[in-house]
Image (cartoon, rainbow, N blue to C red):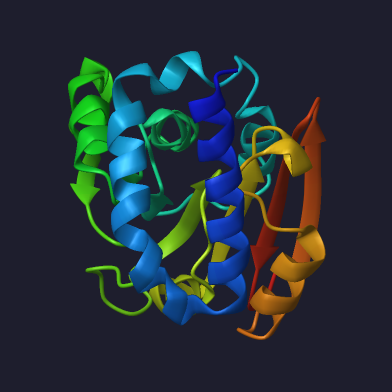
Length: 209
C-alpha cells in the first residue's frame, strides 16, 4: 500500500467517525471526499476483494422483494447489480456523490440489467426522492445518513449496511452505533451477517410476518 493510499484510508475513517457523531460536519468533508473517490473510480474494482459483497448477498436472501431499491455510495455499481440480480422485478437506483464513479458504473452496467438499473450523482445526506419511496436501501462501505435512511424508506422497509472488511474497512461504523441510531428512527428488527471478513447489518421496521 502506498503512503497516499494509507493516508486516504485514514482520512475516510476520520470523516466517517466525525460525520456519524455530528452530521452537520458533512458539508466540510463532502468536497474533498468527492475528489478522492473521483481519483479512485477507474481503479476502484482492483482495490476490493472478490468476496466483498458476500455478507450483503446473504442478507439480501432474508428481505422481501422491493419494488424500488436504492444503493447508496454505489461506487462502480457492484452492489446495485447484486440487488438487481437478486430481485429481477425491482427498479434499482445507484447513488454516488462522485461523478467519476457514476460514469464508470453506467458504462459497466450489463446489458441485461440496463432497463432496471440506473445511476445518479447525488448526495446521500439529501436524497432527491420522496418520503417512503423505496422498500430497500443498501450501503456497501458507505457513511450512513440516518435521517435520510428513515425518510426515504417505506413503512416496513429494510436497510442493509455492509462492510467488505468488517472493522478493517476504511469507512466503517461499529454495529452498536448502527443499531442505536437506526433504533432511534423506528427500526426494531436487526440481524447480523458475516462471510469471511465481510459483515452486514440488516435492519427493518414495522410488522414482520
